Image (cartoon, rainbow, N blue to C red):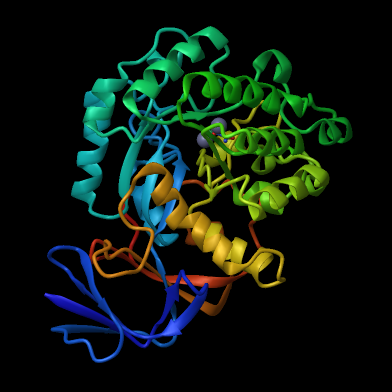
Length: 429
Ligand SMILES: NC(=O)N[C@@H](CC(=O)O)C(=O)O
Ligand SMILES: [Zn+2]
Ligand SMILES: [Zn+2]
């Protein structure tokens, strides 16, 4: 059946503007058929001036399934993703067991298909069991549907092992997606050194991140593999990546909403909702990330959605796990606090959440044009709300953005021509 969306303002990537026009898609093939006025359709979705963006893509989320489902399950995770306007997410393998076998990869893809909400692209382990030693079977994992490889949660500490991984990933044409942290530098630290001094906690020296990025861009240069750097958070890291790109090294990078919007100066007390890895860094680091995102050194936005149970996050920052939820607040936070004040153009945010991740990782979607997959995030940019954990679809409540006022409410999300989220729908469990 041909379905038409009327009354919306469609994102036009070319001009970076919203245009009052219609779009028609086929809900059987799941593809966009045409844009413009006067399109024939058997069914009409009537909007009232909402913005229609390409479905958002998040290359870094933790869905905690299998094994850690007290924090999140595949069901609640993909519903949270759909509620955030995301039609595709890539999920990290630090589950229990870690995603290091083709069967585990295929299971996630299959189960996500059955749930029928956001599409899930598993990222499989770089090392078996994420133990940092023996390499996983990349070819088999790729064939099962892995979009890339990462030991996220930890960095691969052994440079020689990482070099072997790069060689094999180059062969396969798959990206190495790195959590950059030299643990001999970060040690047992939990927050930025300034916050550590204020609160009597252990600090994470900021160079723990850039030290490993520097190692890995050099390995990428020599092996020719695609290096993708997760959650970049410091000024020296941005500088190293900028240098590597100028040198022609195949490196791409992501930045999170929390590292663009918050710095350690905002941590007022020992509250584990503010504990994340890499930590909230200095104001100077935050500004460098913003600059890096604006000039394209940092390619894409990724949430690093990392749900934990309320009990885990009730602990002191000294012992609570690292991580913040992000799927349901990402777009509105960036829109309200970076786009509306004029700090970042809307087009850069949308590109960082749609076309760029699609292009870098070879995914469907990411643009609104005939023949593209009918993936849409439909957003009321005028509507405002206050961030309230009780309204979340994720099981996680761990966010430092509680009570922040945001503009931009996701009204519905469409993937491959099917409505996968409507505001106010019931929670899966
Ligand atoms: N970002 C975090 O603080 N935590 C992540 C791990 C990670 O992304 O490194 C998690 O799995 O909880
Ligand atoms: Zn990480
Ligand atoms: Zn992560």
